Every structure is written in structure tokens, then in C-alpha cells.
Image 1: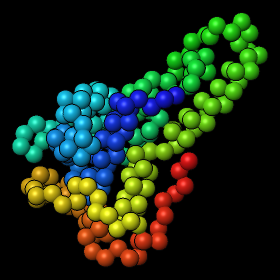
Image 2 (image 1 turned 60 degrees about the vertical axis):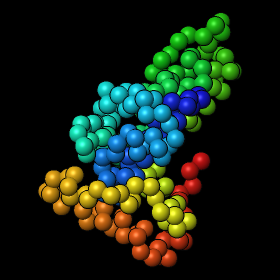
Image 3 (image 1 turned 45 degrees about the vertical axis):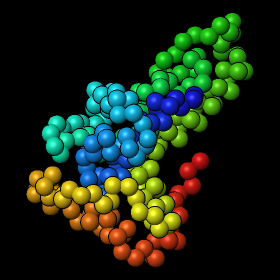
Length: 199
């Protein structure tokens, strides 16, 4: 498996949406993401069109429009996103669970190469299917706090209440306000937190 540039940009854009959502901004414009990630807007729009068709993001038109996550972050697994964008995780097709193709080996059952690549495939898929967007957003925000770095999207000029319905903001406001407060005030208590060991 090799992560393509398109796959990399897709995962980075989803992480950005997740971070913004945790900080109280569930919707971002493509131009904001393109500026942050230094990517062409049209390229990002193509990526979001694919994610929208698969049900991972949704869009809204208008002055305060943009893209937001269509599923809870804990239901977006990295393995599924990579398969959507780049295809099978298996290094060779004869060990793929989703796109198996018989290889040219005359004795597939006793092929040592296939046995090795099956172990590689299982290790990759186990890791990528375990981590969700929620996990990676949490790790990223924790690292921002530890390094005392202000995360992106924290200070935006548009008041949140002008974008979201009052009821929805009331339900989510306390948790997101707490997340924002960890960055806007002193964060000394957070500096000893270290992200989980992600191998």
C-alpha cells in the first residue's frame, strides 16, 4: 500500500474539518482549507465531491456555506477512507479482502511471498481500521496544547451564533467552549500530556 497525494490531502482535509468542529466551527469553506493546506481549490472540491457521494461530508451553499462532517468522527475510520480514495490496502492483489485477484503464482496456497504479504496486509488494515477521525483529532489537539500552539480555525471573524441554530449550539456549546478555552487561556496543566504512541 502506498498513500497517494490525493489520499494524503483527503485525510488532511478531514482532520481539518474535525479540528474545526471540535473548536466550535462545524462548517468550513473550501477556500479556508485550500489556504491552510496550500492546495488548489478545484482539487479540494473534487475530493469533497467524492467524500460527499460516499456520505462522509455534506455541503451547504450561501454566504456561510461550506463543508461539514456528515457522520460522527468516531464512525469515520482511516482504513475506509484510504480504500475509498486509493483502493485496496493490500500490497498485492492476491491477499486483498476487498479486491482479490489471483496472481500468476502456480501454487498460490504454498506461495511464501503471498504468506508474507498477507501478514503485511493484516498489520496495515488492523492499524488503519482501528483509528478513527476522532482519535487523530484528539491526538492533534493534544499536541497543539502540549506545544502551546494555537490550532487553526480557533479565531474566526464570523460569530458562531450567526451560523448555527441556537438549539444545536446549546447542545454542543459546553464541550466546544471547553475545547476553545484550553487554547485561549493558560494551558500549563496540559503541557505534560503526551499523545498516544501511534506506530
